[in-house]
Length: 318
Image (cartoon, rainbow, N blue to C red):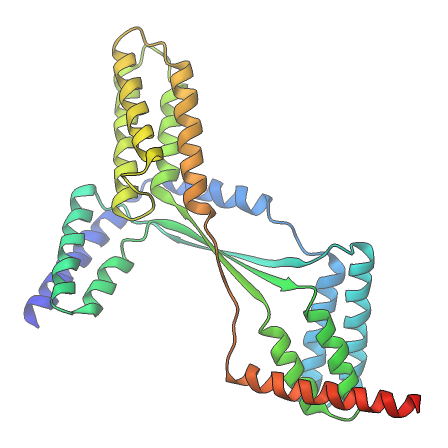
C-alpha cells in the first residue's frame, strides 16, 4: 500500500509540474478553436426556445398543483412547436446547447511513457483505481457536449400531456414529460490537442521566411513531438497510413530546408494531411440516450393513457 501511495504521488507531481508550465500561445490556440466551433453552432429557432420555456413553466405549475396554469403553458408550448415546424417542416434533431471542457496535459513524451509503464504495472497488480487515476490525467483534449431536441418526439409529448390534464390525470401528464425529457440526445466529440498543436506548428513553419531554416526545423521537430504524443495518448495510430505519411512529409521538408528550400508544395500537402488527420480523430461522436426504470414505467402508463383516449374517441363517434 505504501508503494502505491508513493508512486501515485510521483505521478501527480510529474503531471502537475507540466500543467503549471502552460504556455500562453497554447491557451490562445484552444480559445480560437472553441470560438470557431461556436461560430458553426446553429442556434435553435426562437419558437422552439419559447416552447421549451413554456414547457418548463407547465411542469413547475404541475408540481405546485396549478393545473389551469399548466394547461395554459402546455397549449403555448404546443402552438410554438407547431409554428416552428410550419416555418421549417424539415426540423428533426435541433441542437439546443453546446458545452466545452478543456483537459490540457503538457507532459513530455518521456513522462507519458513513464506513466503508461506505471499504469501497466498497476494493471498487472489489479490496482484499477491507480490505473484510472493515471490515465484520467493523461487527457489532452477539448471535449464538446451538444444537447439536442428530437422534434419528431418531444412536441408530441406536450400535446399528450395537455390531453392527460384535460382528462384530469396530472400524474400521467408528469410521467409523459419525464419520458419526453429522457429523449434529449447527448452528442460527445473530442478535439485532440496534440494534433491541433502539430497543425499550428506546421502552419507557423510554413509561414516563415525561407532564410530562417533553423527556426523552421525546430518548429517541425516540435510538430513531430506532438504527433508522437498523439499516438501515445491514443488519439491516432502510429501504424496508420495517415500518420506514417505525415512523419515522412515532415522528414522530406526538413531535408529540403537544408537544400534548395523549395518547400511550398510539400508544405501544402503536409498541412492538408495533418488537417485531415485532426478532423478524422475529432469526427467520431458518441450518441447516448438516457433510459431508466422511471422511463420504463412511463412507457407503460403512457400506453395505458393512449388506449383510454382511443376508447373515448370511439365512444364519441358512436
